[in-house]
Image (cartoon, rainbow, N blue to C red):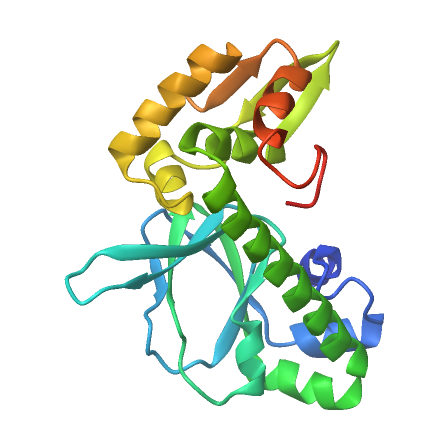
Length: 235
């Protein structure tokens, strides 16, 4: 239980809650290990639980009538999803699939609903999280209208910097390139061409899931010339 509470307290949505409220929220929590490809729920299923990503990645998506997937989001460690349904007694508006194997904590929406009545801090946190998410969506719309495909890939790389030593940069892709292409709203062939152009324009080197650059400035200049903000930013 302590491990679950620690995981919850590290998520921005729950970070400011008191220990007693965290205990109430997590009393019926269940961590489960899932392998890649596991479907957590399907669009239209009754919404009884919300989830937090302890490890791995989650793909949220919808399907068109002809079976084509539209990626809504790809979530990593610390992200919470399904929680906004606490305001509705409804069904899931999207499907959720394990994109990379990991541990997902399932929590009853009923416990979160009870906690909301007793502590308005949760509601304030949810409103703040929703506002931040809307800002990210606005930035994504800006990028799709002002950046070319190569710049959008480079922007994603910048947001996933893991280490920098002596002005060198190593980026580890959090999931496979096919999913990354879908996440960025690109067809696989478009993504491949854009990636080749990015290598030519910036001198990056790709080895499996790792991206190597000589300098951060070259990549950030390549990206931010077509953006309203400079790196580092919240986009």
